[in-house]
Image (cartoon, rainbow, N blue to C red; front, side, top):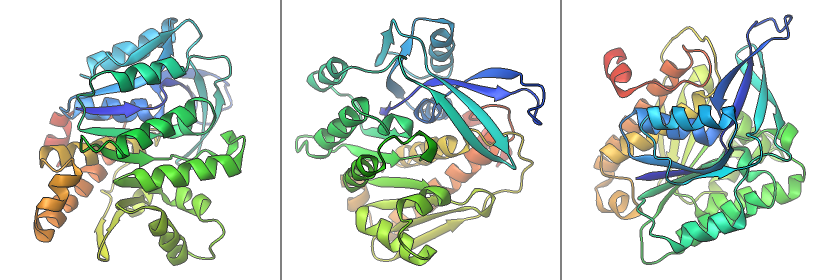
Length: 321
């Protein structure tokens, strides 16, 4: 089972692409929520560790999780309202205005209860705006640290910071938190925009990637939208997969669907653990990683052809590719 740790919220998406009407449609969203949805629809056992409100938006999120095959067992229900994000789409790129203050979020007690219980998970996924602001961001960091140093179990950790610069209150603290969590992760996925922000002090792409590699001891996934995706790993491993040529209807959630596709493929190859990845030959590992990266790109390509963050079902992927 894969536990996704991070935000669930409602995306308010313009009903008119020109934004002139000022009308919005509500869609279930949140980077980590979308990843959980993608995993569930791809046939993986998954759950979401976050908080939602008791309002109609919280009901929307719970229903979509359940209908997509994701567990609700680790979802906290808060008396506070469900968070919102207003999306602004320009040239296939999305910017957000987040409304999170005074909204549902996990408490320290929720994290303590999770760590005290039995954790029937092979892998954990962290990311999104949940890593931006204390106290909940610090609790997620502490959970990842606990998992990475739990010698009794082989916990696999994937991180996608999905950086939203406009939402960052304290850049120095945020950077330090992200850098620390990258050092704990087995896989770190970044977009080219994320890389530019994380290594803004470096003058060019090669030096920015080199800097990221000093932070990430495991695998790095780098997405470049329609230009495809790269995987970088130890021993100068580099894998590239081109993006299918598709008509983009809505780019929201593409990276989250990508994450779900990559994790699902590793799980299906029985390689979603540190021990499993190190036990196979380098040739077998690289073939599996090539297949996982291909699956991730395909799932993202299907997602952008739909309105809202709407990851494909397994049958759609098999039919399309």
